[in-house]
Image (cartoon, rainbow, N blue to C red):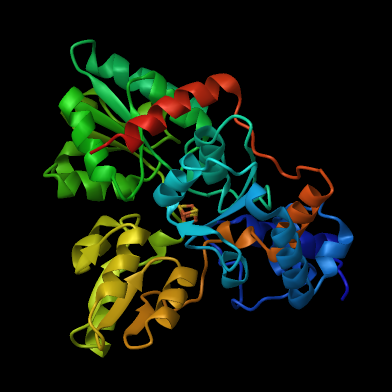
Length: 404
Ligand code: SF4
């Protein structure tokens, strides 16, 4: 196996292609050595060369051997959107909320390997005992949506909104789980909280019981879908464009808004469209359409149902044999649901095979590297949230975990 050598021009092209969250990084979901992954050019590069060239079969043997030796000292958490050749090693699988609960419940483990993206590993570090070491297999596995909320931009927005509404109106900040630990700390310090797609309505209800307005970041779609489901009209929601002065809003627009939405989105879920739903219904009369609330408002309205990945898994798994489902969420999860429910027709609304490009960065070679490092006493790719950030982020996370 040879590591591909890129010319300067092709390297620049590849970096542009694979750095763009709108661009699909995988031609097919087929296991290949890390050296053959085209997107490796923008992944963590300092992995030792033998891991790059190891075959999928060799990596599986090495991971299983290291995993067995580490025993209960290690817990592996796997997000639903992980590829099959990684999720197979997870002790617990789930969406970000369920995995946060598993992290908080760890009593025995010394190490947590989080097969997900960066913000999830940060939350695990915050929720576990201080002596537990949390690791992310590939440090380049971030989240394009989380990156759309820069802490300085959020702080500037908060100051501008606070000045616009004056002291008589209370704004409660809510950050989606998909955000940096510093933003979780930001809302924790300001009487706000974290939410996930599993509990966004409860978080909004909590915020409205304590204030008149919500500032929600970074996903405009989850915020809009949640507000709308709770009776907030589209006219009462304003969109804060962080690229423009004062978010592109007038003082009057801010004063009128009950919910101010950050202009962020998920590149994976924003691909789903009403046209795809219409096509699925035309071609499969009687089909059930269920989508994730990170999809656009009009897509959620056009679907039969919407919900977190946990809800999608539950609805489809509990559905009667013979039922048909078109699903608007990440392809790895949809493919696994289809395999686990052979008595039902299940397919992804988006005909283009496109996994979450950052979840996809967790390749088994990185898992082997981190686990074999532990066997040698080295903690590779540790995620550590500093003390002050941890303290306030924990406040915001615990407010979420305490929701009824
Ligand atoms: S699916 Fe979307 S929100 Fe989730 S990690 Fe990927 S880019 Fe981020």
